[in-house]
Length: 139
Picture 1 (cartoon, rainbow, N blue to C red):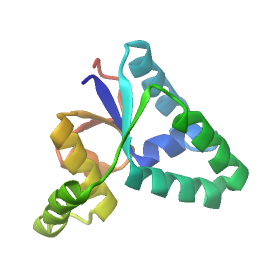
Picture 2 (picture 1 turned 180 degrees about the vertical axis):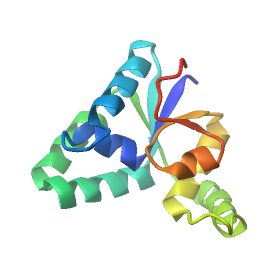
Picture 3 (picture 1 turned 90 degrees about the vertical axis):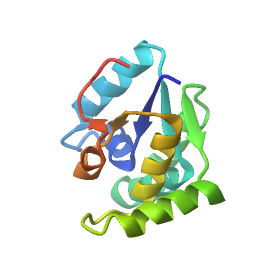
Protein backbone atom coordinates (compact mmCIF):
# COMPACT_ATOMS: atom_id res chain seq x y z
CA UNK A 1 0.00 0.00 0.00
CA UNK A 2 1.23 3.49 -0.83
CA UNK A 3 0.51 5.36 2.36
CA UNK A 4 1.63 8.16 4.63
CA UNK A 5 0.96 7.59 8.31
CA UNK A 6 -0.50 10.71 9.93
CA UNK A 7 0.12 11.24 13.63
CA UNK A 8 -1.75 13.64 15.88
CA UNK A 9 0.97 16.26 15.40
CA UNK A 10 0.49 15.99 11.62
CA UNK A 11 -3.29 16.31 11.77
CA UNK A 12 -2.98 19.26 14.15
CA UNK A 13 -0.43 21.02 11.95
CA UNK A 14 -2.74 20.65 8.95
CA UNK A 15 -5.81 21.85 10.85
CA UNK A 16 -4.41 24.72 12.92
CA UNK A 17 -3.25 27.76 10.94
CA UNK A 18 -1.36 28.98 14.03
CA UNK A 19 0.71 25.81 14.20
CA UNK A 20 4.35 26.52 13.25
CA UNK A 21 4.33 23.51 10.90
CA UNK A 22 0.99 24.33 9.23
CA UNK A 23 2.29 25.23 5.76
CA UNK A 24 4.86 22.44 5.71
CA UNK A 25 2.33 19.83 6.87
CA UNK A 26 -0.22 20.79 4.23
CA UNK A 27 2.42 20.67 1.48
CA UNK A 28 3.54 17.21 2.58
CA UNK A 29 -0.03 15.92 2.81
CA UNK A 30 -0.97 17.37 -0.57
CA UNK A 31 2.18 15.99 -2.23
CA UNK A 32 1.37 12.47 -1.09
CA UNK A 33 -2.30 12.76 -2.08
CA UNK A 34 -1.38 14.02 -5.56
CA UNK A 35 0.70 10.88 -6.02
CA UNK A 36 -2.24 8.64 -5.17
CA UNK A 37 -1.23 7.72 -1.63
CA UNK A 38 -3.60 7.10 1.24
CA UNK A 39 -3.38 8.94 4.55
CA UNK A 40 -3.24 6.20 7.16
CA UNK A 41 -4.02 6.71 10.84
CA UNK A 42 -5.50 4.83 13.79
CA UNK A 43 -8.51 5.15 16.01
CA UNK A 44 -6.14 6.02 18.88
CA UNK A 45 -4.69 8.93 16.87
CA UNK A 46 -8.22 10.01 15.97
CA UNK A 47 -9.08 10.09 19.67
CA UNK A 48 -6.04 12.23 20.48
CA UNK A 49 -6.65 14.56 17.54
CA UNK A 50 -10.33 15.17 18.26
CA UNK A 51 -9.54 15.91 21.89
CA UNK A 52 -6.61 18.21 21.13
CA UNK A 53 -8.58 20.08 18.46
CA UNK A 54 -11.40 20.65 20.94
CA UNK A 55 -9.01 21.92 23.61
CA UNK A 56 -7.00 24.18 21.31
CA UNK A 57 -9.53 25.31 18.71
CA UNK A 58 -12.96 24.44 20.09
CA UNK A 59 -15.69 21.91 19.46
CA UNK A 60 -16.67 23.43 16.10
CA UNK A 61 -13.12 22.92 14.74
CA UNK A 62 -12.97 19.31 15.93
CA UNK A 63 -16.35 18.63 14.34
CA UNK A 64 -15.26 20.22 11.03
CA UNK A 65 -12.05 18.15 11.03
CA UNK A 66 -14.01 14.98 11.75
CA UNK A 67 -16.46 15.60 8.89
CA UNK A 68 -13.58 16.22 6.48
CA UNK A 69 -11.51 13.14 7.27
CA UNK A 70 -14.30 10.73 8.18
CA UNK A 71 -15.87 11.06 4.76
CA UNK A 72 -12.65 10.98 2.76
CA UNK A 73 -11.97 7.92 0.60
CA UNK A 74 -8.27 8.84 0.84
CA UNK A 75 -8.07 8.42 4.63
CA UNK A 76 -7.65 4.87 5.87
CA UNK A 77 -8.56 4.34 9.52
CA UNK A 78 -6.80 1.40 11.14
CA UNK A 79 -8.36 0.06 14.33
CA UNK A 80 -6.10 -0.91 17.21
CA UNK A 81 -7.45 -4.38 17.91
CA UNK A 82 -6.23 -6.76 20.62
CA UNK A 83 -3.32 -8.09 18.54
CA UNK A 84 -2.07 -4.61 17.69
CA UNK A 85 -2.51 -3.45 21.28
CA UNK A 86 -0.40 -6.39 22.43
CA UNK A 87 2.40 -5.47 19.99
CA UNK A 88 2.19 -1.88 21.21
CA UNK A 89 2.29 -2.97 24.85
CA UNK A 90 5.42 -4.98 24.13
CA UNK A 91 7.10 -1.95 22.55
CA UNK A 92 5.92 0.33 25.35
CA UNK A 93 7.64 -1.74 28.04
CA UNK A 94 10.60 -2.87 25.93
CA UNK A 95 11.81 0.60 24.93
CA UNK A 96 12.77 1.81 28.39
CA UNK A 97 15.18 4.48 27.13
CA UNK A 98 12.44 6.43 25.30
CA UNK A 99 9.54 8.32 26.80
CA UNK A 100 6.91 7.02 24.40
CA UNK A 101 3.17 7.30 24.78
CA UNK A 102 1.13 4.14 24.38
CA UNK A 103 -0.58 5.79 21.40
CA UNK A 104 2.83 6.28 19.75
CA UNK A 105 3.52 2.58 20.27
CA UNK A 106 0.19 1.63 18.65
CA UNK A 107 1.17 3.83 15.68
CA UNK A 108 4.56 2.12 15.40
CA UNK A 109 2.95 -1.32 15.55
CA UNK A 110 0.51 -0.43 12.76
CA UNK A 111 3.23 1.17 10.64
CA UNK A 112 5.44 -1.89 10.97
CA UNK A 113 2.58 -4.24 10.15
CA UNK A 114 1.60 -2.25 7.05
CA UNK A 115 5.24 -1.68 6.10
CA UNK A 116 4.84 2.10 6.13
CA UNK A 117 8.11 4.01 6.31
CA UNK A 118 6.92 7.63 6.27
CA UNK A 119 4.93 9.60 8.81
CA UNK A 120 3.53 13.09 8.86
CA UNK A 121 4.63 13.69 12.43
CA UNK A 122 6.49 16.45 14.18
CA UNK A 123 7.84 14.65 17.19
CA UNK A 124 11.20 12.95 17.49
CA UNK A 125 9.79 9.57 18.50
CA UNK A 126 8.98 8.55 14.93
CA UNK A 127 12.53 9.34 13.81
CA UNK A 128 13.95 7.55 16.86
CA UNK A 129 12.04 4.46 15.74
CA UNK A 130 13.53 4.65 12.23
CA UNK A 131 10.65 6.24 10.33
CA UNK A 132 11.03 9.17 7.93
CA UNK A 133 9.22 12.37 8.97
CA UNK A 134 8.59 16.06 8.24
CA UNK A 135 9.77 16.15 4.65
CA UNK A 136 8.04 15.34 1.40
CA UNK A 137 9.68 12.10 0.29
CA UNK A 138 8.42 10.31 -2.76
CA UNK A 139 6.03 7.46 -1.92
